[in-house]
Length: 259
Image (cartoon, rainbow, N blue to C red; front, side, top):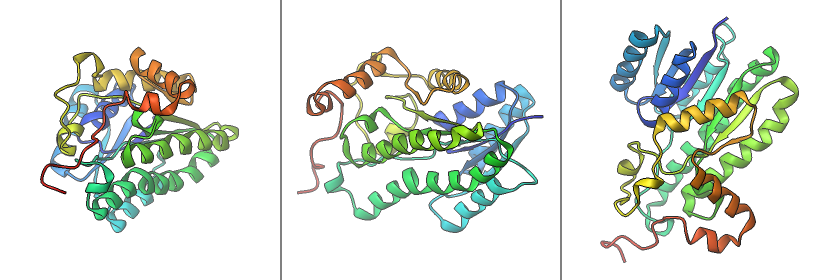
């Protein structure tokens, strides 16, 4: 019996890398993102290379009706989904005080509310079948106070660890994936200036996915790729939070065109 994986934000970056990683393992895929053309391109490539069954489900997850369509797909007993990868997300170009509050709300909804709803739609089927998994994309930004993006990702980590305890009696795995700076479109879309970052801090999407899939198989609660990021996570647990937070790159100043 094949395993079906639904991945949000699957048109690029880590979402596309997760699609490729699961396709290589022989899984069927349901790919979700706003851009139908890019989704079709990803699906077509996976079908050619791996013979994967790829269902394309275009949806803007910030639109309640379109999010409900994805929820219904996750809850459909006639076409069961076995794994969910909550990957969709975005960042903002400035610290919290300088962003429009509407943009902050949209980011919070996509990073917190959407995974909450999608996971809730899937869990009854996973409990009944007593198998399956949920992978939630967090960030090392969630380990310490690093703005509202980090605060949302801290929620994702805590949510995942709590859910893992609740679902363990049903054989359902839950993994928080906690990447650092990864070479995707995320930074450009967020308007982040990362030119000062050394090459050594960057991760490749495929490396993050490979580590996550290994950690999922080992039933670990959290997956952190790279020795430097694992050391950072260790420091976050044991050293003064202010000291460690000061070593984490972040935008500290107001944009030049704002007071």
